[in-house]
Length: 78
Image 1 (cartoon, one colour):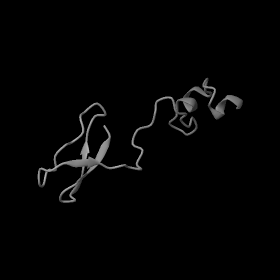
Image 2 (spheres, helix red, strand yellow):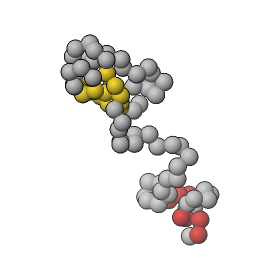
Image 3 (tube, rainbow, N blue to C red):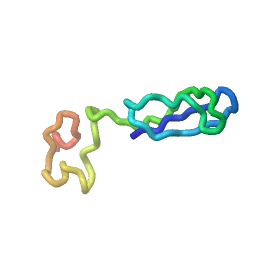
Image 4 (tube, rainbow, N blue to C red):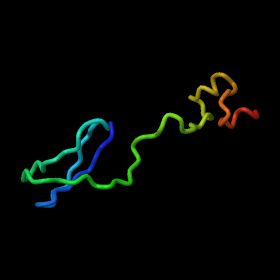
């Protein structure tokens, strides 16, 4: 579950909330009850499942199998 950052438009209080992506955004400041806005965050906490993952290393599935069948894997040529 990703964290989202918010800041109050009235008092300036900044805070984070751990929310599902489908959850509605926070509307009120926990300090003063006024409106908040979601801040742009540079943290990328979610990695798409289709992104390539490294296949080398002692704990990888490739190490156990001796080779990998994925086209993006470096072990195909070994």
